[in-house]
Length: 103
Ligand code: HEC
Image 1 (tube, rainbow, N blue to C red):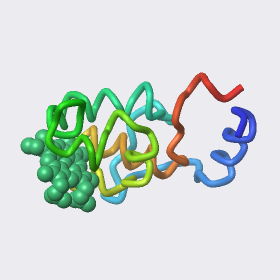
Image 2 (image 1 turned 45 degrees about the horizontal axis):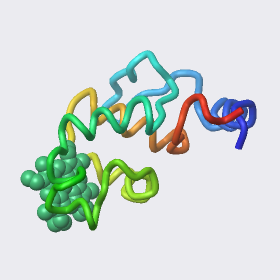
Image 3 (image 1 turned 180 degrees about the horizontal axis):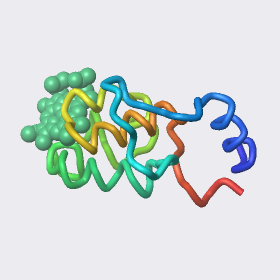
Image 4 (image 1 turned 120 degrees about the horizontal axis):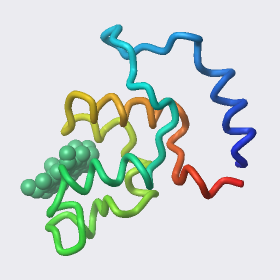
């Protein structure tokens, strides 16, 4: 999917004022990607277990987009606050892998 069609899909799916389940406004950045947003959150919160050498790296490697993408909103069972909102928004906006790769 190229960036233009992604933006078109986003604008169709998103109402003008997007809010979280609790009614709080989402963080300002509307489009999150696995590479630039999700991976850093997971790396700082979910190491060492889900990263190379960790005890569940074989089963659930978080440096693997496919794994993280298929877990999706399940990731939020172990996250909180702002990071939870970022994951929620990432899932809702289509789980983009890389913000610059889609040309
Ligand atoms: C101390 C080690 C450890 C850390 C740190 C850790 N996990 Fe896990 N995680 C595990 C183990 C062990 C399993 C497999 C057993 C299970 O399902 O609980 C697992 C499984 C999972 C699963 C799949 C099973 C399910 O619950 O659906 C998810 C999703 C998950 N972890 C998310 C996270 C997230 C997100 C973080 C960081 C915020 C994190 N984990 C940090 C040890 C860890």
